[in-house]
Length: 417
Image (cartoon, rainbow, N blue to C red):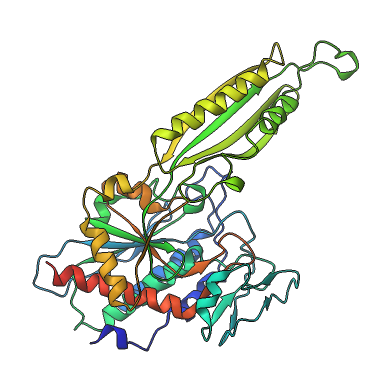
């Protein structure tokens, strides 16, 4: 079978079905997964995988889906895995998603009918210039779409269907992994790598068609706790130290022209406050610290703590704690030690008819942590754009290209073994 001649894609139907299942994760929850509703989609995926003939497909108690497309070659081929996450971002509602297909896009503004203030314009989304004649899927204006990462899920599922239906496409064992809670940084906290049994992996979680990402931010979290002094406000003069005001002063003292998401790009790092809460007596601030150069994280954290100390010097009697936690590290540190996994991905993208655009991510993926857990895992495009908001969109044709890329990668591992 000539892979690039495949026409019977089901990826669009998969995607439209999956995005209508609410799988939003919740960073404030301590359960695993953080929301039980993520399993609603995972159960559907297991049923569909079993219907394809993938006998070992199952959902574990922690919300992970594992499955194996069995080898159909006599060669000894490294076991590879394709991975995507089922959850959607807490940043925008994922309830009652209404996917809309805008067929034969011709460059017009896409006005979303449930909130006509939400307009997807080419001027704001320059990647739409590459989509003339394609079919664009959006939500209706009240929710995000869920292309991050149900596009990846749909692509892996369609590739699995094609491989199971066409034994003439030769490949080794291929593992499938669907994770919960990626959007809140817990996507691989409980993955069982021994059970998975893969040597290399690919997350299908990128954006523009043809992109391959082998570099991410390195990431830490910082929690600052401020202890103030609470006194009855009627008798507070010279005695009260309002922890809320101290926390607000810290945020106001952050650099205004640098070191923030609003003022940085490319490989520039940032210090970003994500949450502030408290009372007069006690307040807390949460920050995320990001940089492609892992060594610079400590520099950013030292600068942040210096700001905290400078602010607290104005409030005698107030105290603070400064807690740093590692979140993930730049996967390039691992992938540069074993380049085959990236090289085959590049070849697969090229065979699917695209020019490879190798780039770094101003963020992270499950692949970041998987790589440091011993499973080298670059990130491949899934085709979505404008993630985490109501203007999110994806091209059906780009999702089809991702399916072809998965198939070519599977074949290449067998060919080169």
